[in-house]
Amino acid sequence: TTYTTIGYGNITAQSKLGRLAVMLYATIGIPLVLMILHKLGRQSFRVLERFWIQFM
View 1 (tube, helix red, strand yellow):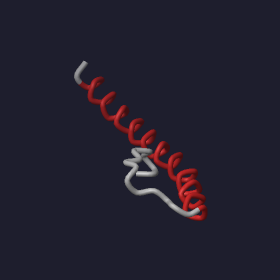
View 2 (cartoon, helix red, strand yellow):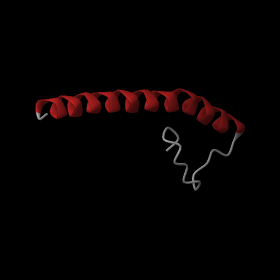
View 3 (cartoon, helix red, strand yellow):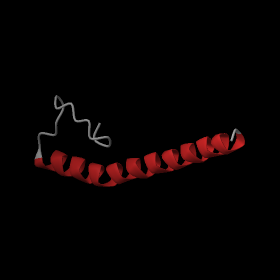
């Protein structure tokens, strides 16, 4: 949930070290998830574009 920033709120880091670890985890993870979503979206667009061109 940290990567996707859903943040249900019922589980949180309590210690300063835990909060720091979550911040570092999110700093790396959120951009990684965005890159993956971008690549999946681009691939989906290419497939749909080929499908569209084939039937036009």
